[in-house]
Image 1 (spheres, rainbow, N blue to C red):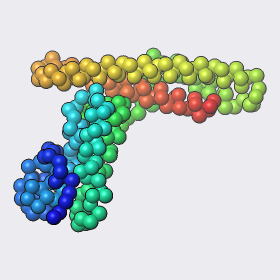
Image 2 (cartoon, rainbow, N blue to C red; image 1 turned 45 degrees about the vertical axis):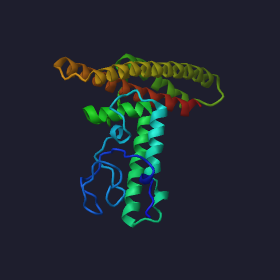
Image 3 (spheres, helix red, strand yellow; image 1 turned 90 degrees about the horizontal axis):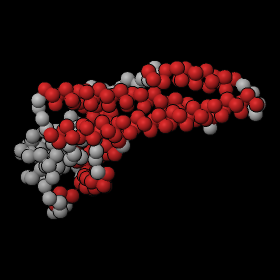
Image 4 (tube, helix red, strand yellow; image 1 turned 60 degrees about the vertical axis):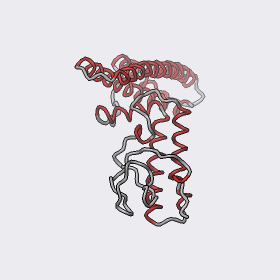
Length: 238
């Protein structure tokens, strides 16, 4: 008898790459395994990560539920179960597992999850801000001058000590600013989820959706810029 993970678990729905089984050509109704020949089926490459792991496009996800779903699917697709299967089944198992791993890594991190949702809903978030946030413009320019001066001074000198203290203060300020941005993002996450839960299709709801996505993109972009500056500070002053 051909044993496989599907034999002990109940039916689990997941969008497939095709409507017909790749092996026996019978109709596949969205389960991981063909009911007729019990061969594993490939997960659609077009499937978004939220759907892949069985979650709606919300930004507040229960980490325990996410982890439980990930391990459930991992057991179904893990390559160890397919070592004695055909080359085609091994390839499908590897592809499904790779997609699941990527989906899980993306959704378990709140910032990556938000960036991914923006990618789905409003286009890619590939552009990393290359200019300071407007309210930090002057401070960042001054900070860059101080960093350049610090790199040029002799170590263990009084000037070096003074500049280090100033840079540490700037680092503390920027880290607090980063935390403030993350708090603002959390508020936007709640607003987005509430809007999704209402499921309204009115013009007002669409305008609210666009506003939230725009503000989310702005905060994520600002956070990325500030985070990069903090990383530069850390690598320079330790």
